[in-house]
Length: 325
Ligand code: SF4
Ligand code: SF4
Image (cartoon, rainbow, N blue to C red):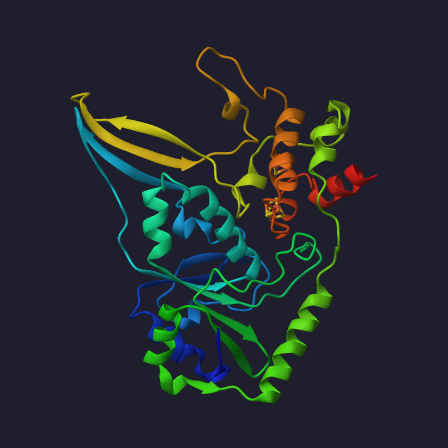
């Protein structure tokens, strides 16, 4: 790991320089919400933000994408070979990518995900926690890998951690923008991180997987009565990985395109199989399944999105507290 310093008044020049690596996606504010979008001008970028509504996951795993073209027995895969830069990714969302890697890069690798993640330069950014964040409880407060470069906001400057040879090359290409760090910079970095740590609530709420399995249906009914089955909680979750696949046929009925798009285990159709049987017919079964996946298997990074964007205010921490009680 190499440490450097980038003065805040140099960040725009750094932003301009990273376009030479690939297409830049960054947090952009629109209608009061932050989303990761293609950003050509620094004036469009909002680096001071708490959480994006949709996590940056969609840059690597689009909500909907073509994956195959086919004609009779022949087919070829549609693989995205564009170089990208993801600028401004928070610790929790980087850790979420590591969880997605465990799923998509296990043999046999998912080539669509693999091609995108390996061609994407990830530039992390320290966050501004609010009361919905509980990343300390999920051990996702800080990451030492999963990024190329990390920018820590220390007031007048960014304390920069460079974690990969690729990241090093990017900083060396803009050598004039970066400075060496001294002891005082290190102290300011530690102080900024300590302050960030103190702003996150929730300590040791976790490791309740067995408790989830023990709870009976009545427990889940209490929470599911408020659930609209809208699927928002899964769509905004940076670690949700489920997708469905469908084909669109041409008029000749022999050729066509295959697509995949995000799916949600909170939707009734998710558990429906060919003969009409549904493995998770009732809302309480779906809620229990989602929470078992997130809490039991520890596939939650404490970003708080599922609570913030649930239209009926179903709070994941409220469920955790009830389970512990
Ligand atoms: S966002 Fe809330 S209401 Fe919608 S499916 Fe999830 S828990 Fe249910
Ligand atoms: S379960 Fe909720 S808090 Fe946990 S990672 Fe998903 S959206 Fe964030």
